[in-house]
Length: 292
Ligand SMILES: [Fe+2]
Ligand SMILES: [Fe+2]
Image 1 (tube, helix red, strand yellow):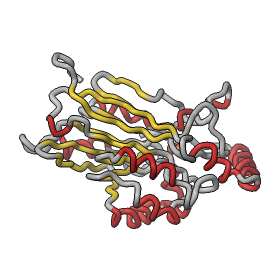
Image 2: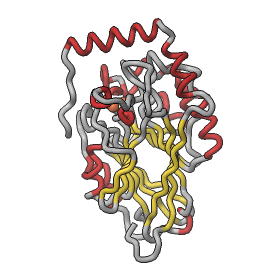
Image 3: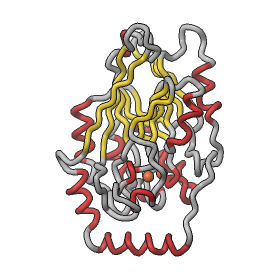
């Protein structure tokens, strides 16, 4: 568990003032036009090589979405671009790595229907991010999205059958704000699967990327994270205001950490040098002799 970041009252007041001003100046419409519109949303393709990949998983695809941050700068009607990208990709699975809101779960409730259309053909998994626990109402979002097939991984795992093969998905509560964060508990169900039912690949979801080494130590081939927004504003001094950004793709021995730049923003409707993005990840066989 990582100590949560806490800001001074002065800094919180300054952020609130900037946010209010940006809202008054039409920040939401500006953000939608500049970052979420057709041709603006970045689609990043990542291939992951897996040793002894079963034939049924060749080309298996996961769309990774993160940091929606519904709130002052993203609301109902703003996800048409994301939906159009997903319709083109037709992923097997969609994975969400948290921070659905800015100020509280009430921010995302009006987007239920739009979000229900952003699902994978086989499954949709989600974990929460630090913002989602504000007022501790995240259970309302679980209840709203489960009927649409969303599965929340809260220190838990699920085994997905794909033909005669299996992919294991596991996820944890947010490493900073989750009350109980249990990496071992999240993975153990997959590792305990009976011979012949074990997943060929384990994919871990963790909002904060700093939990990745713990998943790597427990056999995850891929860790999906967000939280850093790719720095959001890639300029000297400003890039260090947010959480530390480890990079977009980091190899940790045999584990690949993929960090999404996210869809939404916090603070101001501003991204500089850092597009909003949809990541699409695909599996392929590692060349013979490569441990993948
Ligand atoms: Fe975020
Ligand atoms: Fe976050």
